[in-house]
Length: 97
Image (tube, rainbow, N blue to C red):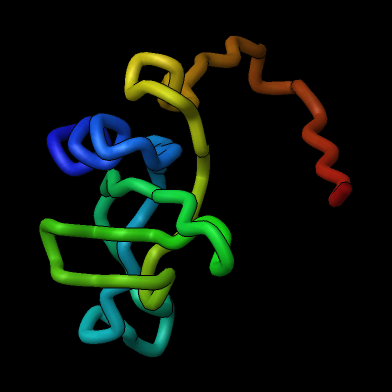
């Protein structure tokens, strides 16, 4: 938030980004690069476009950052959650979009 608001105070457009940080050390035979939920910011730099900045990890650019939501403020990035109740005989069908 501090970096995002500082950029805005200097006249730059800034957005809040939430998602995951890829952790290659967690690669294994069953799962690749499990990571943790994380947040960072994007700042619009004229001539370059939207650049991602992760001050927590010292990352500039999107190396290792997996975007889930991009919003103006953190409260607009509501985490995805939910509950589904069904009986044991419910048939599950999944399709990819």
